[in-house]
Length: 130
Image 1 (cartoon, one colour):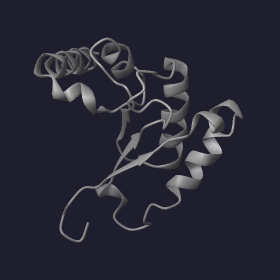
Image 2: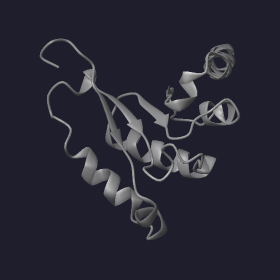
Image 3: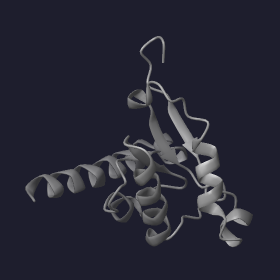
């Protein structure tokens, strides 16, 4: 941050935390590691540990719950990562509070990555028209 970089701070729960309904507590504890100064330069990314590279994706309600919770705590962009792909991008980008995506393996295939960008742009255009 001292060199004008904008770090992406990833956070997320394990499947055990989710099943125990302790996911929001775990996420809050992780976010406490954020510095008090310079928060405006930080981008947050919700990446449920159990979804990364697994092909499993949280439900839209689960994504919205976490993003809304984090937005109550911090005023900064919150991306979604964790098995985001061309098949679920439209639904995920439509979630209130999701400010974009942190694309992992799906970015390795140009056609797939283009499809995700295309869906994101359609959502932005729709929101701009409102």
